[in-house]
Length: 164
Image (cartoon, rainbow, N blue to C red; front, side, top):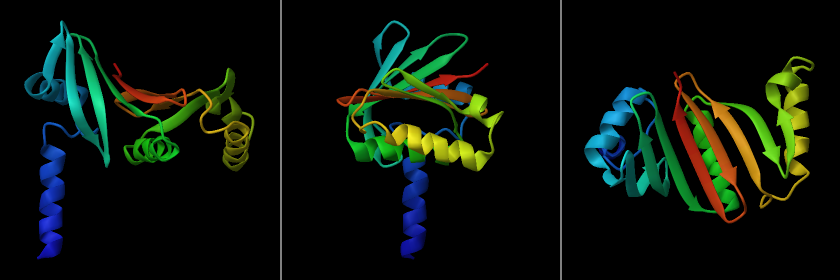
């Protein structure tokens, strides 16, 4: 019975207006934003307490006829930065590039020259050269979305853009 209650609460939370999931298409996500978020400016909708996995975020969505862009923002913590990367992987996103303090690691370029295990090892070494609080930008992509995870050591911003 407890398992059933847990499953029911998970389903209910994934259908909640203030919960973000990327199992829906950009068109469905746009309709959800337009129907349940607060309009805070022309073509801009806001949500003060949006849940993405277990984290709570301030969110903004820019809606146009051709695209949807959703940005989540929260205070920086090393744990939160790590969790967001795990969440993106769980949602089917692949990491394309990492930029830390002006230095860039392009995964697709490295993949054309090295094996996957060599690229993974080089990426870990690249990231570990810098403190977790160093400014960084990680570019991700899924079949329907692009994402940029940006951190400056004070604020974390995760921006999702619908892909054409």
